[in-house]
Length: 375
Image 1 (cartoon, rainbow, N blue to C red):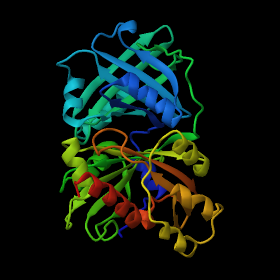
Image 2 (image 1 turned 90 degrees about the vertical axis):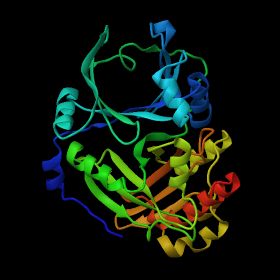
Image 3 (image 1 turned 45 degrees about the horizontal axis):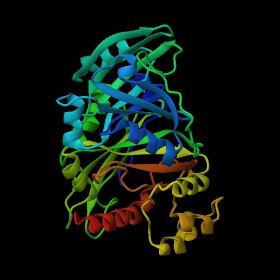
Image 4 (image 1 turned 120 degrees about the horizontal axis):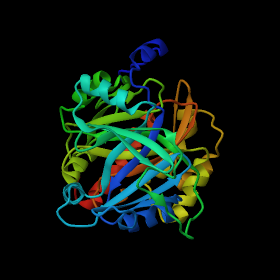
């Protein structure tokens, strides 16, 4: 495995586009109202804001749900023949917008455009009684866009044009904290192009690289490079398929999503055992590894704080790097097509992405593909 770690000085020098964190993720979905109910009931999000006919929006409806620092915007079209409807018809439900919180949305846009980004949205100000928000945006892989959000002068519920969503139904949260990373799948031969994009256009650094020797099974393989911004708050692993005896998870994704897009969203927790227990009790389904995975876990990762007998029935995976260890688990896909899913992750010092679990995870994914007849 080739691993690249940039020095803090190098990162700071390249950080011409400081990003404070993930502001929100917007998913285009076929039924926003039902999707919002699902994310509240199953994942413990709470109702935050709404935009639609009642707020003067005629072509779409958006429900915003929140858990700690994670905000999801779930958007559906209200009429036929819309761009949102076309997107859903082609891709199914999936991430359209990764919104990044910045101090200066105009400067972020100008820096990106002069370095070769394709414009999605020129800087524009939105205002209401609660202040002003400035937004701008650029295209990235597939039909995903990055929107830069400047909200220093705004104290409203979410964004201008949204009203507070008041509802008596708000299940308890499950302990999800923030977006740890977000993984994109791109076509064969495109990974290095998008690595170059994030390096040159947004000033990111490649912090890790995995090839088909690191991420493979008897049947399938992929390659991945992890891009990170200057302060490390934004991490975008980028995957592409590698030749194998059968169709890999990335190939399957690209086939059913009909192009590049967001494969999974990794969300952090401080207590993965409790979080996964709560999620399972609410009906969230997870990939399962063979029970034999745990027979040699202590030998492979050394001493950990958690009881392995508590991890085993939940299917939680463990891996260690030079900085510590992490615990992780992956849901099954959360929509009709075998495309996007979620990762639940708890870091105990580790800064890596679970290389030691790749083989077990891929074999679990292959079992799901075999059931679907797409392996």
